[in-house]
Image 1 (tube, rainbow, N blue to C red):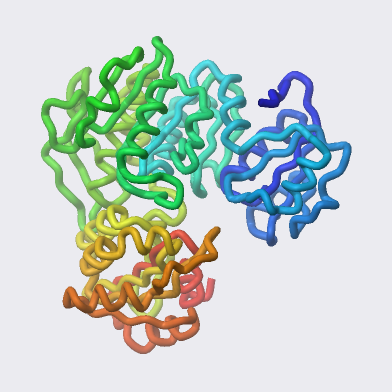
Image 2: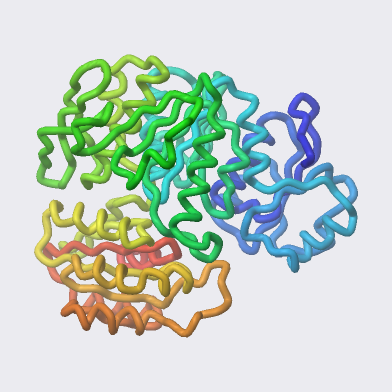
Length: 459
């Protein structure tokens, strides 16, 4: 594997530079004095932000973009071998890395590298611990998979020993990392276009846990089934957390909610109890907060600072994000695209003031929709009324013989009220005609479904 010499900046080219993680890495290297350029399929807020920082971005991926002055090419996991820039890189025998390999090499530059993994909750928990580190004046470098309000984007370049990043299991990316502190929030079936089954996924998380050094630490959700398979025999310290299990090192009791579904609870920790109030909705965020508290304690951050930071944390973009109101209808946007995430979001919405709960859902990838079809239907039935958009194909080309109509039929068979429209215009017109004052409308999915709420609000 090619190794970047960070003491001698060179020219690095990113194929897929507009991705949330790739753009962040590009910015980190540019800040370190590297010449950075790259390409993406289309212009976006992230690519425009890179251009404003002096990074050259090509729109459209062509062999001619790969020039002889490039010292290293970095590929996102979405790039296939038939990509013209991939082919040109191989023909010219240029040094190259995957996004994960570059991120792993970058982590080695920090004494304390914190990697947050799990099927769900990575962005929120990464942002929570980042909020704590920021309020503790530790000057961390942060790479988060969403737009984190406190740093005004997805990346922050700091000047201290601390580096915080999400660690995604897809294509085993996180196995290229070098964390000193790791978190495993949960382990469930997902990304079945890459993994064979749940056991295959669990094996990857076990390998991730084994990356931690003897002097390191793993924070893990104690409610993960057969957790010992992941933790037994590890050389590092292991700390567990749970929302309810009193045998965990960190757990919650006395849970209550305010009028908007924000939880308050007593956190039982290794150093005593703390009263914690969150400004984000959903009981799943109690678990995320406990993981963040455990991380803060590992880093010897004052508990008063940790509690204060968690209370001030108001979430990241597309995580139960309030977008605005129109004609008395409140509109929320959420990134949920897995049945477990949908369930958590809709349960959180149940505690939010509303008359009728509408969910506009855009399924994400044919593989995921087919694998969890029944689970999607059951989860979506937690809404009073469901509106389906077409499946967002992302990287996939084979529809596997399913569509959003297939999901609609499943929901209706369970007694749910469900509508399907093939275009956003039709969905928006239907909502304008049928949503009434005091309704709560949630746009949900990992694609571009957020545009529906934004179009309704005129933003």
